[in-house]
Length: 492
Image (cartoon, rainbow, N blue to C red; front, side):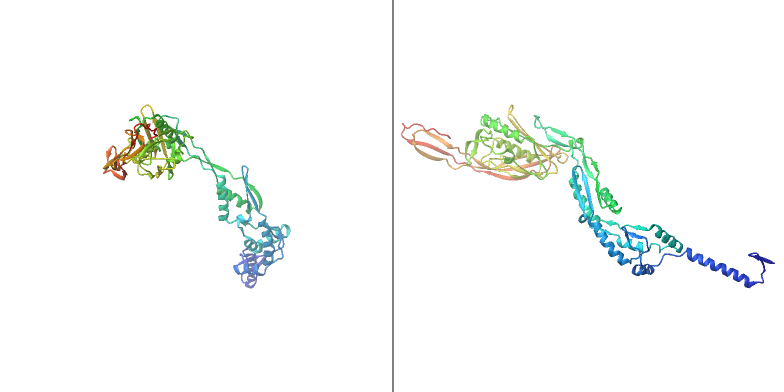
């Protein structure tokens, strides 16, 4: 049997010829495999290039031709270029008529210079032999550009963007309510909420970093703001404010209480107090809120206690009934209304239980409390001159289900006055006498607050405090002069 190879007939016995033919074929195959399957240089080879190699002709980094340079030479030149590039960064953030400019110090840049230098050094040296030859041919004809990226410190940038956002953003206006002081009974006027505007910080940061990575150094961005809706609706807030307590006193049980100027002062003070709002954690001062009581300020002269033993005419006399009614309403509103300042009268008032009055005076005794609830407290106050009733209503967050409070005072001890003092008046005619200070009993009285659940008493009443109203010793002045002397004109 014969085999024809390259047109020659040979016999299998011709072994030497066959070996030569197949040996040549294997050699060619090996060369091809070496050319095609050359792998990327190992780490040692790469490091050798970085230590002692030079960049191929046509390599440009940041526009600088580094062909023929070593790694260290190129790095020195490019470091200066990058510093120049970084110091030239200026980013304007514009919103409306406002502009914020970010410069290099706001970014705290780092760069990928070392990675770029490494990649550029290995360009045309990390593929197969055939591919490497193609890359070098392309380099000679077209060259190759590399760009160094500026990498901002995201923590610093985020903090700066947050500062800007705090100036731009505005929270939504939640629906709110205000007391309707034109109404003759407690009522509110409701206002719908309004959307707020919020900047998307992450989107803005991404836009800025993308532009920087693309080589833009001076540019302007215009952040978009998104609507932020109120958390609540008017319907939501209507159920959050309810009547917590109320209290009524009477200023018509005697001619003294009904005295026209006294009633005028009560009406005036009530009108000022009506509609007061006390926010959570806020302290309310009666004297500060009502203001000084002076005749020039429109307050009328009416009887008021002075020196703890007599009545005198004073501007604003009678408004202690307003402070006392408020005080009792606050106590009935529960322990969240913390009374911080309160003083009782020198002697008990006829319009409140003993131990439950609260006197006030310009530059003197005051009534104050702190709203320790988690919601606004709204005070409504009315003086009805048709039935002589003084009423205060406290609105706020609901008390626990079914809970109400009542207060009462209990007399523990009666204190008797000392014997009336007699004062001789030799300039008065004998037989003429007047009582300057009326004798009054005193007492010790304890104030209590009783808790109710669904109208039923819950436990024993809470003892609040004990007041002492000291007895007042009377003082009578008796004329001891000649009976023909004229009777004196007195202002007491």
